[in-house]
Structure formats: C-alpha cells, structure tokens
Length: 82
Image (cartoon, one colour):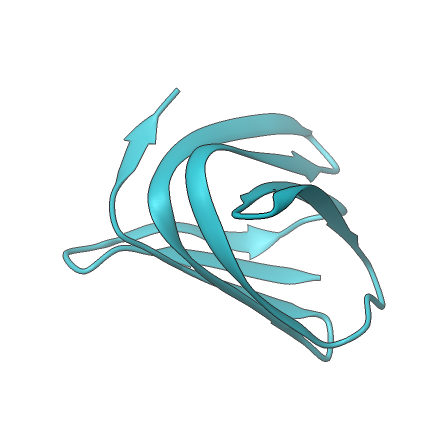
C-alpha cells in the first residue's frame, strides 16, 4: 500500500508499506494491505512502518489518518524522528 506522512511544513515519508501501526486516540491499531476504508484521529505516539526492507518509526504529535483503496494518508500536527 502507498503511505504518505505529511506535516504542515514538509513531507516526512512517502513510499510503499506492508503494515503500519498507529496511535489512535481510542487506542493503537494496525493497517494492512486491502484494509477497509477508514478515517481516524491520532494521539501523540509512535507510527511504526513496516516495509519490504525493514521497519521505520516516527513519533506523531496528533493528527488524522485516512485509509482508502490501498492508500494511507497521515496528516500529522508534528513529527519527531525516533
């Protein structure tokens, strides 16, 4: 699936991912390929991205995630590389 993580001032990540774990405001959740459409708010916490070459992690300071047709868009308030 295609993943983009964007803050108000820059694009943090853009690429292919096999799984992404998010800090939802109601609890942690994971998105895999062919996930059902979803919109959720994010709390402060880690976003863990699994790709074919390894794992990356970013800490978001809140935001929104949208999942639709194997595209995941994260609009984050701020991101700190972990």
